[in-house]
Structures are given as structure tokens and as C-alpha cells.
Image (tube, rainbow, N blue to C red; front, side, top):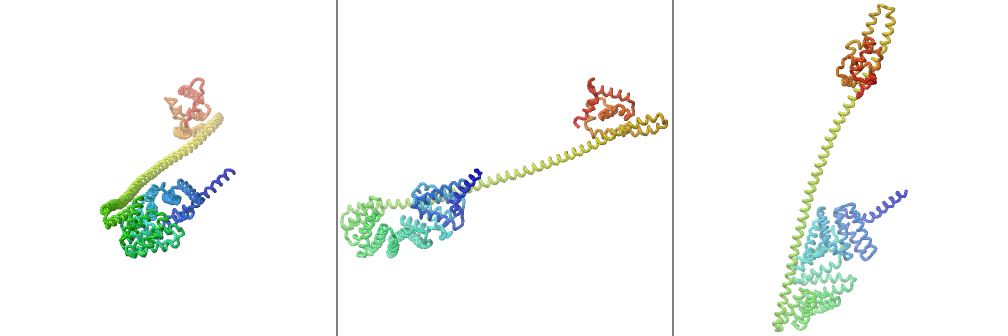
Length: 580
């Protein structure tokens, strides 16, 4: 009873534990187009409860349970999904660096599944992991390619993929393509209102506005920075909102500077510099100072322009912000040239060229890293295809070997069964022969018993006849007829008797021949009658001889059997049927 209760409690606990991870298993086993959103539900839960330690412990315990489950129930798809969930959890709890290599393992693990949608999700995760420049562009492009083929509506956070491509292309100086992908990001913005990051919208508008400014398309520049100002109206993070409001207004002010609308530009640039200093943000402080350098230079106010440029150069140099170093150096070189300070102008011109070389090398390295990443990705795909080919070949060989083993086993079983049937048939034949032999022996023994009884009856008849012989003289004919009726007095009768006796006692005559070298038919008859336990009188009457003749015949038989004086011949003859 105690054992039963313990088993019941254990099974109940197991069911309870499985119930904790059942939602994961049910969602992750799905392979149709709903799979991405089914899995996203768990990531959403992470985001909602990331600051709650109770939920954090629950997620970590769920991961442990899932690992235990998969140890007992291996499943490639579930393994991949669990790795993805661990990576997302690590990202939210700020220890994702330990999973940087794991995502590549997940990509390799997922390859045999031939599931493009799952691969697109993996590429999206891989795109956001360091090293960013090379893989960010490549894996985002691969994810976009697959998502476009399957349908963007089946994936959450589609906008992030286009934003990732747009930001890398802007950094590489490909402003037209950056605008193309950035525009797609905003077009997909309304695709899923739940799964989108409002800050990504602001960052994307900033890149689009900056790219249009690089192309001197100022109306488009102002359009995207105005979109940022509209989005900031609903922000609750006042500090970040102030910084980005200054960035948006500052970039609008820069377009006014380019159009010589200086009175409109000044308050916007001032706000930009103040908000950047208040944050503080070194990059935007340097950019704001360079914006002021341009603002004053275009108005031929070289003194304030030089001060702004020097401030920008100092901050940019301290933080290795090469784009702003170039801009500040160009400003100072131009100002010194206008003011007749040739040496200083030449010095900053050379510095500008040096910084530009560094920037070009950086861009080339970025482009080369993208190419290298592409080659590495192609090599990975090739290795996965090759590995899959090898695995398929090994699987085919293994299946062929197993099929051969199964076929050989079947053939062996058939041959064994055939042999077994034959042996059973032979055994059955032998059993039937034995049964027939036993039946023949039984019948022969019954006949011998009849013969023996017949001899006894005839001996009794002979006694009666002998008593009557003294009274009836013509009974000789009657006596002869009765004696001739005795089967052992004729050759045919003896043969019939001998055959039946041999059936009843198959080993008797063979054993007798082995004991006697010169065995005669008369000795055979005498030995058989002794074996049947007939008296000398009964033997004499059966053989048609006198009792004295029977006695002499017995003595000769005893001599032929080489019996000792203390051995009884009747007992020795009784053993001659041994082995029948």
C-alpha cells in the first residue's frame, strides 16, 4: 500500500512538472507559418516580467525542466527552440555574451530540418550579435530574403531587419540604398503594432534624414526630423526626449544653414548644443559644434567659427569620432586659409586627409568584413550541405546494412524453419514407425500368447488322447490329425510362429545368435519355447518328441550357451530379449 501511494505521488509530481513545460512543447513543435508568433509569446512574457524576480526564477526553472525533458525525449526542433529561448532570456537579463557561439550551433543544428522560417528567426537573432558590422548586414539581408518569400506578416519585429541594413549601409556611405531599406522599415511599421520598438522608429527617421542631408535633399531631411518631433510628443522619458528633440531641431537647423536661412537656424542649433551638453552626449556635442562652425563660416564670422571647430575637434579627438574630426579639421583648414595662416591651414588639411584615410580604411574593412562574412556564410552552408550529404550517405549505408541484416535474418529464419519442419516431419515419421512397431509387437505378443495357450491346450488334449488310446485302437488317425494341427510340427507353422515371435521380441534371436556360433533351427525352437516358460512335457508335445529328447536337447543348448554350473538356463534365456 505504501509503495502504491509513493508511485502515485511520484507520477502526480511528474505530471505537474510536465504541465509547467507543456505550453513550450506544444508551441515549439509547430512547423507551419504560425510557429514564429507561437514562440514569440514566450519572448513577450520575458519582456513583460523582466523586472520581476519571481518570473525570472520561473523562466530559469522552466529552462532547466526543458533540458531534462529533452535528455529523455531528444528532438532537434525542440533543441533549437530551447537554445533560441535561452538566448533571448540571456539578452533580457544581460548575460547573453555566453551565448554568442551558441547561436551558430543552433543554425547548424536547424539545417537538417529544412525549415526556412525557423532559419529566418535564427538569422535575425544572429544579426544582432557581435561582431556587428559584418554579420549584422549579412544575416539581416538573409532574414529579409526569407521573410519576403514566406510573407512578412508571419514574423514579428520585421522593421528591425530593415533598420539594421539601413544603418550599416549609411555607415558605409551608401546613402541611396540606406534610404531604400529605411523606407521599407517605415512602410512595415504598421504591420504589427504590438511587436515594434518606438525608439527604432526614431533611429530610422534619423538615418533617413541624415542620408537625405548628405544628398542635399533638405526638404526630405526636414520631413523625417519632423516625424521624430511628432513621435517625441508621447515619450515619457523626458531626458531622452529632450536629447532627441535637440538632435531633430539641430539637423533641421543645419538644413537652414545650407539654405542661408540663418535666423531660423540659430535657435535650433542652440537647442541642439544645449540638449547635447545636458545629456551629456559627446558625439552630438561635437556634431552641434561643427554645425555652429558651418553656421558662422558661411556668414564669414571666422572667429566664432574657429572656436566652434576647435571645440568639436577636441571632443572628437578625445573619443576618436573620425567623421567629426574630418569636419572640424576641414573647417579649421578653410578658416586659416581665409585668414592667411597658411601653415595652420596646411596642417589641418593634412590632418583631415589622415582622418579620411582612416575612415576609408574603416569603410573598406567593413566592406571586406561583409564579403568575408558572406564567404564564411557560404562556407557554412556548403559544410552543412556536405555534412548532410555525408549523413544521408551514412544513413543510406546504414539502412542498406540493416536491410541486409533483416533480409539475411529472414532467410536464416526461413531456412531454419524449413529445416525444423523437415526434422519435425522426420520425427513424426519415426514416431509413426515406432507406434506401428509397438502396435506390431503388441499384436505379435498377443499371437504368441495365443500360440502358447494353444500349445498348453493341445498338451492337455494329448494327455486325454493318451488315456483314451488304451481303449480306442483306431484313434491313431485322430491323434495324427490333432498332432498335425500343432503349428510347430510343420515348417510353415514354425516360420509363421518364428515371424510372430520376432515381432513380439525383436532382439531375442539376434542375441541368441551372438551367444551361439552354431545355432540350428531346432535350438532356436527349443530356446523360444523355454523363453515362453513351457514345461519339458509341453515342449515335447509341441515339438513331437519325447521328454527325454527335450532334456538332452536342453543339455546341448546349455553347453552351446557356455553356462556355468550355477547358472540357470531359463534365467539366461529370459534375458535374451534385452533391448527389444
